[in-house]
Length: 437
Image 1 (cartoon, helix red, strand yellow):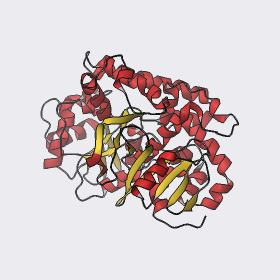
Image 2 (image 1 turned 30 degrees about the vertical axis):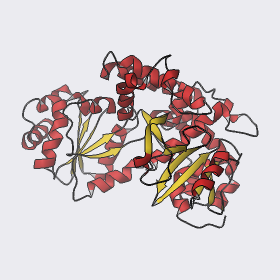
Image 3 (image 1 turned 45 degrees about the horizontal axis):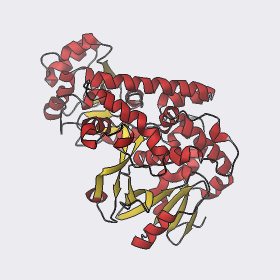
Image 4 (image 1 turned 60 degrees about the vertical axis):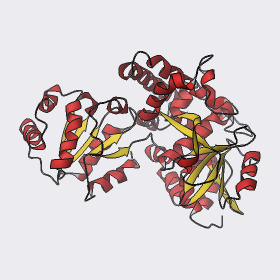
């Protein structure tokens, strides 16, 4: 299974300014597999510690956490020399040992020659009081993107065509891409769900796996949050499908509970943001850079980390997306499609916002910064191409480039790029070139 983050790991390994690396991300996004695969392929020797499963090794970090003492202890325990350039030290489930997490600071300061990758539940690491701020490199591990899903399920040629921007070939196979995209809406990118689908292509089995993951997350709410905030986190978490199913998808506290106010839910909301279990997309009203400087943090939309988990939580019927109709992906008011586009943009490295007037007369689904430009991205779940809000935005700001993501084939005219939904992660590459398609 190929992962986008693997290339980032290679860049980290070869960096002259390398620090201990912390892989971050929600539970079950593939951090452990990625570390082990990277160690197996790129190093002669791997020393792997799991602080949850190996309490005997964890004990080495209880007292003296100087690099010299830890290296000596690990060499003794594993019966192997730890060589600075050819040995990878993996510290998994590091949230179970505050001393081990803190030891990364001393490896950074006193022994940066050692190659160390740590990972753990973001829920635990984010709440730890001994986090080594400024002493680690970080890589975020997301659920598999659509292209990673294609590669992980034996559709490498389809993924390659997208990377090559082979519009002619993609147009001829557009029906296949639509079916694969709808399948991804249901399977999503959680590695366990993708691996199951790759073997048996059983969507019911996939849904059972997703339900288990969602249950695990809810258990974590109680484990890592105070008794006061845990119910509030659950209420926010459970409300996401409802908010995204509305025509106006702005998050409203009063729809969680009658009389609810933002200040009483602030800690719970921030906790969800910090753990990356949800993605916050804030509104901007100006067409100015940097977008973050003009964001209204009080007006925002909430999305889950994965489209498959979203479909499971919303209890989307696993057969409904494959029914024949003129709007193939219009189910659930386009919420699944918008969730998918947000996820693809984030995984591709963009920080999405949405544009809207305070009175709500016009709203563009996403706007992103590409190079030195602001690019509006309007999302349609089927083949429709009309968008009053996008027209309003263009009239107001006259942007150089505008993107409309639908099931239509690629097209370009007067700065308007019609990009197939299954290619939206390639938005930067597409905008950077001129095409005759």
